[in-house]
Image (cartoon, rainbow, N blue to C red; front, side, top):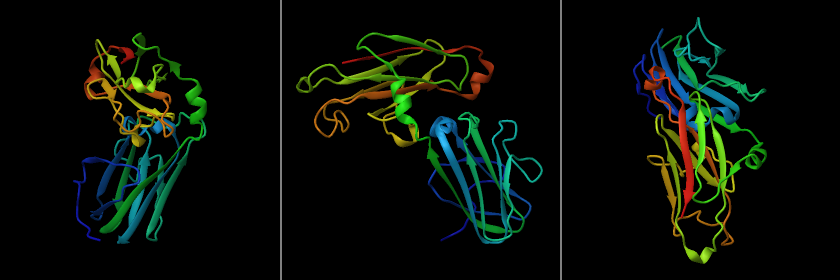
Length: 252
């Protein structure tokens, strides 16, 4: 294992659950990380565990769940682990289902020059089946209108092909946004999580061809496609007070 600086102390690096981040931090300095809701559905997480292993030196772990504290420190944080041995950990468990902000911020502080490994492990809510039943069914070629007042909204749809499997039709899904854009992603017979699917729209459009894996289930029949639509948030949206409105439709 080789330790080397992979990010400047003031830069915030986006991280991915399950991946190990090996780095060094000098005495009295910080390394900053961020876990994005728009990439990993933080509002669907039941529990997140942040693990810090220090191989040389003494590094501490500070966490903020507030957008007002993007670089948590020894004097400003929501959660912290400051043990003197080689292992620090912070576990946050959802109890009201709305505990997490749009981003989770993490800082590694060097009490001494330290070489460390940092990982994030997440467990999603075990209530997806309940959410699937609340999805709004789509009818082919008929548009549905949706609108979000802020970048934290979300909408769930479902679509089950009505035609025979031998017709070999391509399924096309389209989101048409007149002002602020939206993103959507989907899963077959399962609750869609952006972290766990490769089915993400490209320029507000997605298609599934008969030759694509997932066009049908293992028995050769159509399943149900569940779709999640969310605002496509950018920093420019802070200065653009317009709703995220869209027309969503699926056709073949």
